[in-house]
Figure (cartoon, rainbow, N blue to C red):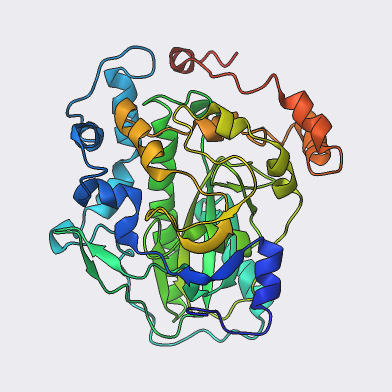
Length: 392
């Protein structure tokens, strides 16, 4: 099989992670990502997509009432600011870092490597430092080349260019960043988009700082956000959660309410293992996200082998969305949509005992009862209520 990972345990790890790769598998071409296609593919690009991107510069901002006022867009765009600063640093050279290219080294690699005698202890240290910088979750897995993009994009003309990385990488550090629950409760709205933007800005700072720490120890550390490779397989393999029908990673700490970043490194560290707890079993019987999707972009039924749509990875059995339908709704509303995140039964505050009890039931053979209990949840918070501080 092309791009097959090395080592005798990879099939066992894939099994635990719920990853089923077929002989038709090929690495994903980033040029076919739906957001990249919006710049070059006439089947996706439109006046609505142009207005969508313009709204992030406060151009063509619609005034359409609750959740879509100027201040809602203003907060969303301000939340994205740090991420935008990082992303735009080398735009004139065709590198949209964090999205179409990895983030450049801002610090050199120390000439002397710190000696690592205990990989497990070093992993614990990295997780400790990650939490210090602000990451909410951290897991570590092997450098699995299958999930690297086949190439990256030169954003000056959206041509393909090599997806080059240092040659001796061994591990991927995956960081999780919790999105604000109260803002997520207002999806779909421009206001809710501030939850996404804030975490992209947070993760930009966090991933750069943690990568700099590793380079200061004398090792390679490539900071990465949405660029370079598919983060979901790495997150699942690192034991942070399980892949779900809504195309997200469900975690026991925050449900689906997370953004992920990653660092490619050759620092000697111990790897975590996938930790299936039963989220997949719940998704097998739950279709709340698919039912709630306004454009019916999410799948029903069991996972299927993808690849017919060019914006889906080929040769992997999983739940796959219709990216064109999904992004068309984003363009229509001029902001991102995460109704599927808001409506997810696992979008709960698990610090509360009642939700901990529900989680235990949902991950057990009593999952159907948990789904029945869930039927009344998922109501949207009116954005105006967020502004006045009314959480009721």
